[in-house]
Image (cartoon, rainbow, N blue to C red; front, side):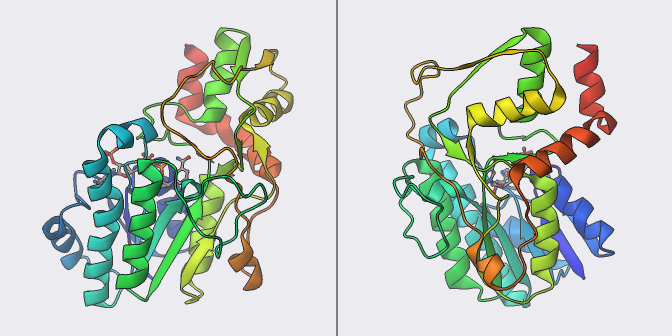
Amino acid sequence: MKLVVIGANGQLGSDVVAAFSANGDDVAQLTHSDIEVADLDSVSRALRDLRPQLVVNTAAMHHVETCEREPEKAFAVNALGPRNLAVVTRQSGAVLMHVSTDYVFDGSKGSPYVEDDAPRPLNVYGVTKLAGEHFVRCTNEKHFVIRTSALYGTRPCRAKGGLNFVELMLNLARERGEASVVDSEIVTPTSTAEVARQLVVLSRSERYGLYHATAEGSCSWYGFAREIFVSTGALVDLKVASPNAFPTKVPRPRYSVLENRALKARGLNGFGPWQNALHKYLGQRTEHPLESRLCRS
Ligand SMILES: NC(=O)c1ccc[n+]([C@@H]2O[C@H](COP(=O)([O-])OP(=O)(O)OC[C@H]3O[C@@H](n4cnc5c(N)ncnc54)[C@H](OP(=O)(O)O)[C@@H]3O)[C@@H](O)[C@H]2O)c1
């Protein structure tokens, strides 16, 4: 299959490139210097000569505080961007696979959200990502919209400008021997490598639609940190941070766990417990350049 990955040097995009390449597909990689998704002309130009059968969009403006400060830009990237991709892929007959987020929900349900649950985003990031989903679903019927959550991967998240949560915790353990982490937000930590493999499986299915795609189970950020430290044997004084320790004006869902109901119903779910994916990541991470950088610091 001939495909284009947009956001190819991002945290998820780089694993998407690796997963499709490992599958033997012909993968063209587009970074932000090759395409501006918010600009229809740029999207048309970038895709015209490549003539992909599938376009995977991982590009987004997803730093939550920045989205709140710059709502027009967030709408342009997160809503008009996928719309532009949907328009161009519909014209060429290509399939569009678009990545979305658990932040389309408000967290009040208190049990895992399924694809049919009504979204109600609490912040600009969630509103603009939901608008992007709608544009894709209304514009190109050959679409996959995939909501995922709390990603970590071997490449740093570009929008968040640094280490993923796992590396941040291990850095704190090494440099300070202590960490304070909130236990008031419940999420499902999800490995980008696993999401990428799921996208490959879905791309072969032609079962277009909306999918939740996260690891199984859930925890607080505190619980995630504890599992990281226990699994690595890191010596660290881990405390629950008070809710006011990291003040933010931007509301976030306190519970954003997703159930992969559509994947399971179609026999396509490839995810296992979040702890298993974390252990796999920790087992492989010494091979990554980031590790040697951290070890030297
Ligand atoms: N990270 C999470 O925890 C999380 C959770 C749920 C869902 N998601 C979703 O997962 C997707 C991937 O996230 P990620 O963590 O891999 O993000 P990332 O590391 O920040 O990668 C995003 C990529 O998109 C590119 N990009 C940003 N704006 C663009 C634009 N206007 N036009 C073209 N390219 C643009 C970025 O390039 P530059 O950096 O050069 O601008 C970067 O390569 C996003 O859709 C996000 O909403 C993420």
